[in-house]
Length: 178
Image 1 (cartoon, rainbow, N blue to C red):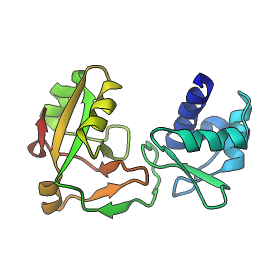
Image 2 (cartoon, rainbow, N blue to C red):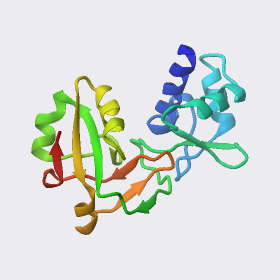
Image 3 (cartoon, helix red, strand yellow):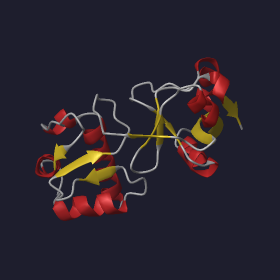
Image 4 (cartoon, helix red, strand yellow):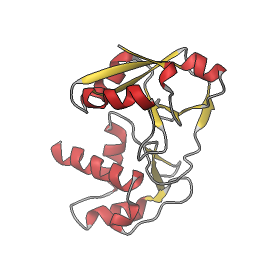
């Protein structure tokens, strides 16, 4: 299981940030040829289509999607490279949540939520999910985001296929720390 987790993280690294690390390219929508991904990973560890299908199927965060015939694969969100994963603009619920580590609170309280090296800020649909996300960064801190007011003020929200809400930024005025 540990090997599968490490390979899953390696796939995320490749499809979100550095496809060139295995000599691969993504198209403008973030799609990679499945056979290129498998061949690139197989250079450093045992890997085949069956293993890739298992990782995609069992990934708890549902980070990846295949096209219909599984000849293409992409990360659903979290990219640091410019791709258009064809996000669907949606109207969010009144409140969304952002989990982070305690060490980032001072900065967030000053400048709000910014994507840093990624294309979007990630928001969760519920407090518990945000708390889990925050715990990956140390002691978790959860912000409540007034998504209703942001939408009314013209901010555009997108919902990735795996249920993560994405937005370009969140100003301090729309956030409350819990």
